[in-house]
Image (tube, rainbow over all chains, first blue to last red; front, side, top):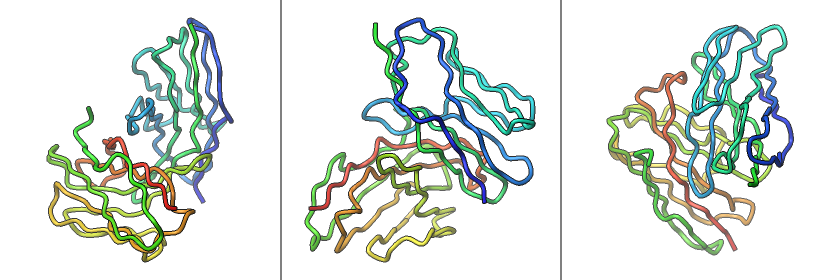
Length: 111
Length: 114
């Protein structure tokens, strides 16, 4: 069945460091891919999405590229801030199925 | 503020209690969802409602009983829960039950079962 695998956290970085959070997926066909973010004490919010191969989703300085050949959708940011500290979830869906989430990766950024 | 409001924020209950979680959205969305978030596990989809009709029930134990009286409100009724049911329960909504739609999540109810 469909599944999402994220790198284990927590990820601890200093402010202005480069961020990569790895996400790979297993799916038949061509799913849509998402990154959601959960700030402390809040629900999840959509961060970015990509719906087809080679699409790049971007928002708030974060980027992720849909790589069909490696079945990956890694999240990157060139310079993280303390306010980026949160839990990041990779997710996929295909038509007619519910969103499937990964386990989440906790990011902690210190000044 | 996502437009999805959940109450209460925290709930502690014994195994013999009956309680209800409430979710409200005034975004004009037609689909609403209950998710369970446990530590170190993926989010688990519990129930999906579309236009007030339950369209998905992912093998959830009968001690969880959802109710959707209208398109703006969703409840999760709880009775005779187990300690392993302790988790963050998240409500979400989307414009349609098309899973490519962006989901809007509430802040969740942190449930502790003693």
